[in-house]
Structures are given as structure tokens and as C-alpha cells.
Length: 227
Image (tube, rainbow, N blue to C red; front, side, top):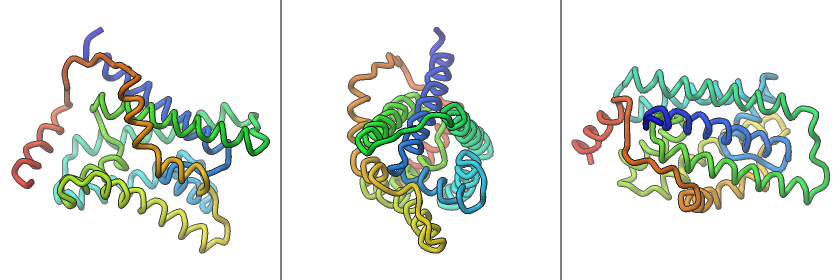
């Protein structure tokens, strides 16, 4: 298979797996990954689907990314927003498929929640190595790491995840109805990096070279000029 075609197939697979994992954490009702938790609270507040809430948050984050980057890249923004749309709609699709599924009992809910977080970790492992597009949530982490925190990925991740956690907590406190922030959020926050490393070692993609759509080259040049 052509490498670019293989990359696109793997990217689509990672979207499906990521959305599936997030849908599992929603069904387990024991807390979701921070961005999804923020989406759940926004969804409940506005009366819209979780996917549409994540699309709204993703679009706002996309604008924030460009402001933090201090420059605009229309092509990159278009591709990233297409990713935002597909991710949101696929989550809604999985939740629609799972609407008749019930997860009862604390032990089963914990198992489903952990499996969901691990699915997200596997999807992110694939997605980061394919390196075709970035969801604005992940682009935010990259911008913070490269442009503001001198390459400190741990601090960048904590700040990037603290933003949706703060948003979700604020909406929950104001409305006296907090959802989506629980055990699964803590597992995601504390162990997602380890899950990604695990799947980096166990899922072999056999990618012989890197490819780009063009805008990644511009980012690398920019980062060289402004270390």
C-alpha cells in the first residue's frame, strides 16, 4: 500500500478508536478524559450532543492556537477543523450505537472506563506517529511546549489539560451539577502518557518515512527561527 494511503487509513482508524474509547468512558459514567469531560458539561448545559459540544470547544481552541502561535496558517486550520468535525461526529455515532447498552455495577464500570482510556491511548499512539494532522487540543500542547515552555512536555501537558478541567469544573460548580470528572479523568490525567508509550512499543505501524501536507514544514522552520 502507498505510504500516504496507509497513513490516511491509520489516521481514520485512530479517529474511530479514539472516539470509541471516549464513548466507553461516557457510558461507564466514571469520568472521561479532560477535554471530553468539558464537552460533557457543555453538552448538558446547552442541551446538545457531546460531539457537537466537542466541535464547539475544538473550534474555540483552534482560534486560541493561532493566537498563541501569533500567525495564521489557513491550510493547517482547514485540515485541523476537518479533524475536529470528524472526531465529534464519530463520537456521536458511537454513542448512538451504544445507546441501548447499559453498564451496571461499580466493578464493570471501572473495567469499561479503564478499557476506554486505554483505547484512547492506543489511538493517540497511532495518531501521533502517523503525524498527518493535529487536533487543536493536541496542537495547543505542542505550541505551549515549543513556543513557551522550552520543550517541557510534562508542564505543557499539565497546563493544556488544566484548561478543560477548569472549564468543566467551573460549569459544574456554577450549575451545581458536575458530570464527566471522576475516576476516569484521574486515570487519563495520570496514566495516559504511560499508555501511549506502551502502545508505541506494542503497536508496530512499519512507517518507513514521515510525510506532511506542507504546513508541518513551515512549523519546523518557524521553530528553528524561534527556539
